[in-house]
Length: 207
Image (cartoon, rainbow, N blue to C red; front, side, top):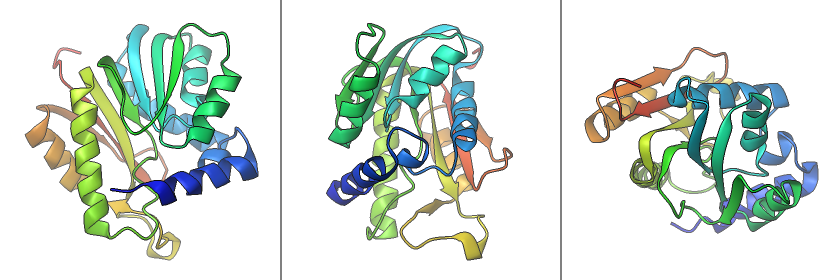
């Protein structure tokens, strides 16, 4: 799939709003941090781990990890070269993070997360976007030793708030896909006050 239009979309958000929650198309910094909290539940109580952040934007999740006092060997990946350039600029001199332009991580880490990358489909047909999501989940699984997490807008959003250029996924369908394809240990979080859900896929049941 050609994601050039999506790349332009996010590059324009960054030009308009800079390195901020709005610059990666979220409504507020508070909702951005709430998403981070849900995604990182896949890591449990671990304080030292490696993480692939797919759709990293300007590296806000890495900053959040630091604020939480969690040590992390971090790789941020984003399809928008402008985002990667901004992330590298903001984190210049840090030896515990690296940023890569593209769709996929170039390593296998303990965990991988993807926040917001499945939301903006623009004019892509819904069936094609769903296939893109499933292919990306395969990569998240392959790139993750202990587990991965991702979020999607929910099909249970209020109809009057739904927008044509966004993709609203079926949480039950993706839960079933993850259970059948990746692990018996899958959690669906749909109770944190946003029009979305988060899925946690843990490969170690004891984690």
